[in-house]
Image 1 (cartoon, rainbow, N blue to C red):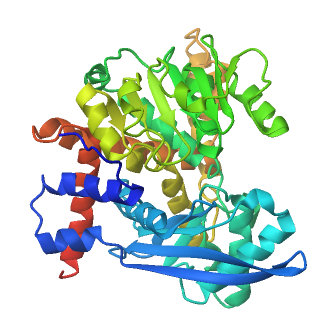
Image 2 (tube, rainbow, N blue to C red):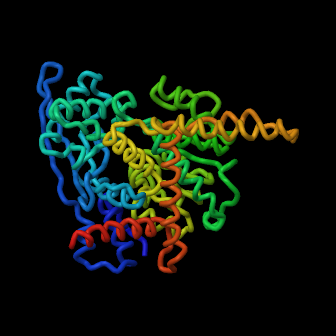
Image 3 (cartoon, helix red, strand yellow):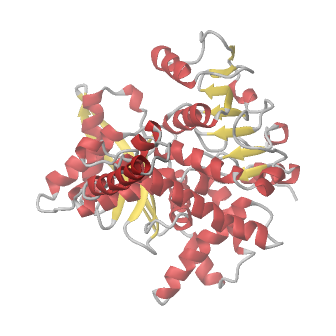
Length: 476
């Protein structure tokens, strides 16, 4: 039965939760404990800017403390409000459980348009917001660890980390209070690209299973697949770049705030990104058809649709017209509950947000571990790996020369084999393994149970079950 009214983002998350719980053997009390948000702190603080006092409203929501610290980004946007932050915190709980990072779910937000303030002003605002959260242990290496989200990035995370260190001068693990920092400030290689890279790895894993690909009425691999990307921010840009440059996908449309670019022969992601950075929009880009109606481009024919910006962009109003047979949710909550029902009835396969965009929190976990261990990944073993590899290569070359076998190792093989794993290689390896394992856990439920008809319900079942087991182990 189709929903006739559009639920809010928070209601959508709860409805999807309840849809999954129907397939599980959970007591009503435990199910409700898992569903509800534990706490939300609202802060209103003042900062003197441009000769007058400006008051800002921010939030930090903790959905579940079944594991600590809790984890979740901080977003800067005028659309930030309590219900949105709590819905995102709930998704973080389920996301962390699905990809087996040892965190509870949290989320933060500041109601602000970061484009209205210069860098120095943003630093003052960020530091004051961080101060209000830090003094209440809502930013803490062992209790609550933020990360970047929409409107924030490495710069803001570095400010928060420094603010925490100033207020906790004897905490040796201070850098672990926040992730997504620049590498020179305690961050990790590969964090900026992590969510987009996770999208790529998620699609690669999906296309490793011909049975799943067939359910989306597709065949073959990623090469040549027509892809529409909505949002060319950090996530959308990296996902589109990697899919086109490394997997041979064709980016046929890019959608941004001011409209969409369409090209049947494919768009150069780098060129579009440069144009966007230079002009602030897509209009005027040469070599592609521009339309000011970006929402209409979501409905164009393609093989894969990747909404990578805001929640609710696919809803009751346009779901029936979406032609993509496969949708990957790179953003949080881009498909409403009502739209999800319409798309499922059409036979559309949806790779859900809690899995598809989990690359960010996965690499954030690696960064947090790096900060607690106080050593760069690969530092102790890289040269040892290279030495062992060199011994093997030299022995093979000696045997070939002594026995006149007439073969040699190709220079390309030697170069690759003799290179030890640095931090970036290890991060990508860990992310790839995480995305593969998480997909397989969803797939086992999806194909193994006749009452589970889609990946989203499968993802929720896996995540909720893991949270429930943790609560039970605590005696709840």
